[in-house]
Image (cartoon, rainbow, N blue to C red; front, side, top):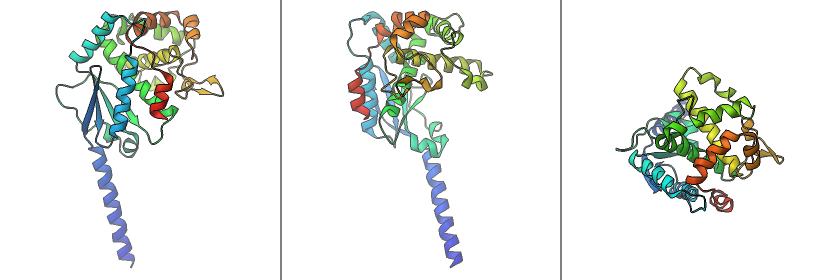
Length: 267
C-alpha cells in the first residue's frame, strides 16, 4: 500500500514537472495587428484578450484636434519599418515558470524591437487596465519614439529631452528611482527602465488615468510609491520639462483613450 502511494505520488510529481517544462516552452502561436504594431500572443493567451490589447492601442491612436498628422505618420512608419512588436503572455504561466517569458521566439523579420510583456491576469479591473496601458506605453516611448526621435527620446544620451525631464522629476523628489539601484551597473538597462517608467507616469498623469488604473488609495495618489504627481495640472505646474515633452510629442501623436471604453474592455 505504501509502495502504491509512493508510486502514485511520484507519478503526480513527474506529471507536474512535465507541465512546468511545457509551460516554459509555450510558443507565440497567434497575433493581431494594430496601427503597424504586431501584437504576438502566447498559445495560452485568450484571443479575446489579445483583441482587447489591440483595441486599447487603437484607442491611443484615435482622432484628436491636437494630432499632428505628419508626426503621427512618421511614428507609424517607424513602427512598420523597424518591425516593432508587443508580446502578450499569461501571468499564471509565468508565475509557474519564468522561462515562459524567455524561451519562445517571434518569427522573422521581427527581432529585437520590443520591450515588456503584457500579462493577461485572472481578474480584470484596475490592475489589468494598468498592466495593459503601462506596457503599451513602454513600447510607445522606449521603442517607437526612441527609434523615431532619438535626439529627444533616446534613453542613453544624458542630454536628450527625455533624460532631462526624468532627472527633473528625480531632483524635485517627485520620482523615486531607488528601487532600481541594484541594476545601476547595467548602464543601458538602468537608463532604459527609469526613463520608460518616468514616461509612463508622466502620460498617465496627463491623461488623468491614476484612478481607473488603480494608482490611488483613499482618493490620494499613490503612484506605486514611486511617482507622487497624478493630475495634468500638477505636471504642468511642477514638471515644466515633462509637460513640454508631452505637449511637443505625446499629444501630437497619441490621443487619450476614452476612460469608459477602456473600463468596459477590462471590467
